[in-house]
Amino acid sequence: MTDPYHTQQPQHSNQPEGTGYPPQQYQPGQVGAHDPGIGYPGQAVPPQPAKSSRKPLIVAALAFAAVLVLGVGGYVVYDGLIREDSGIAACKAMADGKQMDGKPKSADDDKLTEAEYREARKIFEDSRKPKIREHGTALIDILWQVQGMEDGGGALALIGPMGTHVSGLQTACADEGYIVKLD
Image 1: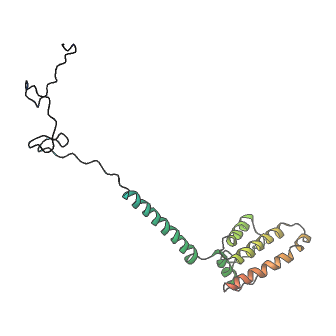
Image 2: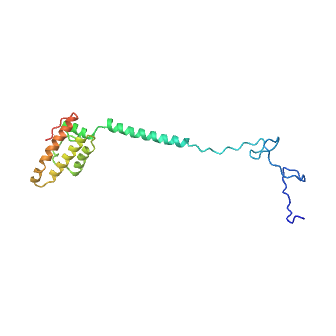
Image 3: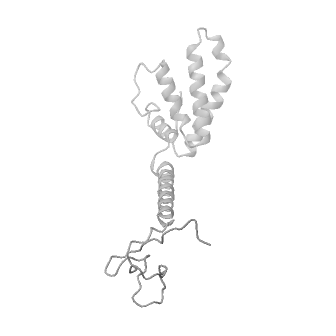
């Protein structure tokens, strides 16, 4: 029987024509054989694919953590040891006979503007000392309320809390080494 689908064998350039043998495959131990995976003799070896490494990622994460720790630690040292507490600075200024912000007292210190009230209150709000913060902000708030009253009768109701916070602020300042006379 004859083959109805007669196909011609492909011609290979590395095999002489007409030998009738099928193409030979590479055998690793065969002398003089060409390994198609590495190229030809004298040809440069192709570079290996880059290995995925986590080392740069780990180094970057450690560097970020170190910067974060140093930054937070530096701020804590600055805020706790280097920067003077605003409430203690106000106690020191008032003990020296100045305004709580350190400015010299003047004749027109009787009435607070809203900006002066907010500035004075912020001085005590930012204090790290809880007693100075508590009594200083309360005293400034009471003074602001009394100043806004039209009649003197309403101010009488605030005399008790005012006395409490004046003596509380004086005690808190004295605990820090500053004797303040509030009149």
